[in-house]
Picture 1 (cartoon, rainbow, N blue to C red):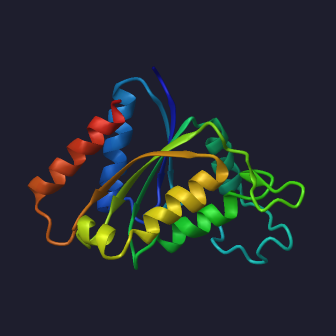
Picture 2: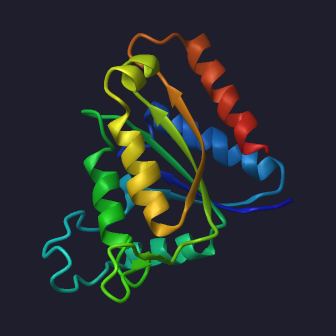
Picture 3: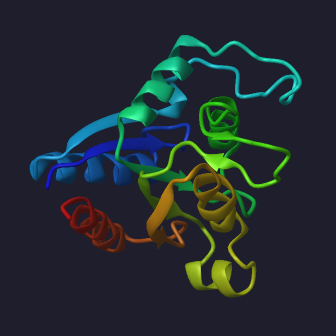
Length: 191
């Protein structure tokens, strides 16, 4: 079954290993007939700061308006990003803060602290690189960046996280190891 897939590269550089993961996913998904759009955040023009919080509206730049349209179009999201300082890169965090706005991604009703999830029905996979060994990130650090993305960002808006693949440590990895990781991404994309 064909899906509408939005791949979001949250690393500022398309020349990174995250860029390679993104490219591999896109090519494999297209090879089996999925409709794929790509947002490389490092190539977009926008202010990543939510300047006034939610106190007053901040006009969305053209790239962010288009990103919201892509998000509404998509049935499935693929977020590709590194773990830096235990969490997501500032560029990705700023992008999410700017586009996942009240009235677009969620809505509070009747004084309830639990929002209506306006992006319900979509799914997401996470492709995450790190220099820390993934087992250490999980058992010692308790995966704060992954919990943030899956639970308090995606699920908060109604997007159901499906698969998370972690790749690391990138530091010191061999070309053969990286090829193994890319094959995992290809297999995921072709489902």
